[in-house]
Length: 440
Image 1: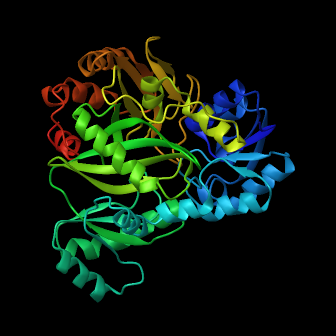
Image 2: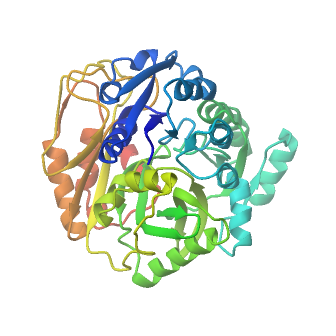
């Protein structure tokens, strides 16, 4: 097992990784920007290294500074969390060159799935259905225009690298494509240090279904599925495990496709395979080669601490997991992301509490200041139920009981959303939340 692990991230995911390391008796090193010096996660870690200024490009995206911190503190492993450098194949390779274990897939596996256009081509080669799409990297505007016209509108413009909804735009015509391309590229470059883009067909009605996997190199364990259809501005808001709309036969097909995708890759570590589901058909969308934000609902439904499992796998400790989970789940878990909303006029979190029956993953406590530099996430609130209907009731009760005084948040919107008849009845698509926000 590792002696000391450096966490190349911040906030709630850093807190989560520290908790997993404590279970495994691993010392932790936190890195921070100057604005995060007093953050809660830095107080939980055994050691702290300030790696740069508040801007992420000088700190959390500064691979050299993070590696130097690991070398100087004698860390033998680096966990990247999610976002920032978590899916940066060059950083993974740099860790290996320095003799530091990268807690994630191998660099070539990250490269394969990190380029969404290349990943879709690979999926097609494995017999996994995909939506029609085309990379536009290196093309001049006239070529991009002709490509879009041949594909036909509406289209989705996506960043080829990274995730989290960054750099994604729904495009209705050529004029919109011309206007949005520069903005989307700039957003992708800022988030992932890469502005490559591609175009994909747009589905007017679909669900977003994903499969959690954990590979050992020899075996790909499937740890269930999630429905992440309720998104706003391409950011997930409500996630649940399992996807309750799937029949056992559809779930079996979903898992078969996921095994088929990775069968020849020798995949290692955690990964999430994302699909669009429409008219009974699954379409491979992308694979995130990292720990996912919404991993908690999978932990609640499987009973597996997947962060601990990920660290054990990287350390070469044998994992005693079933090859698949039950096709007929016996529990439902739902997560609601509590986020700050603009404008953030008050950063001091004066009060923050929630019912003891809920699981809450957060990087903040009452008395902390919300940091506006990076993302809007304040906390992830999770509940369970023996059925989806019961889990929804528990979520409604839990959200009503949350007390958060300080920054303006989406709490009221979440409470309204989970009370909607369409949500309760599970009659939603990937476009529902935007429509509800527009009419609220």
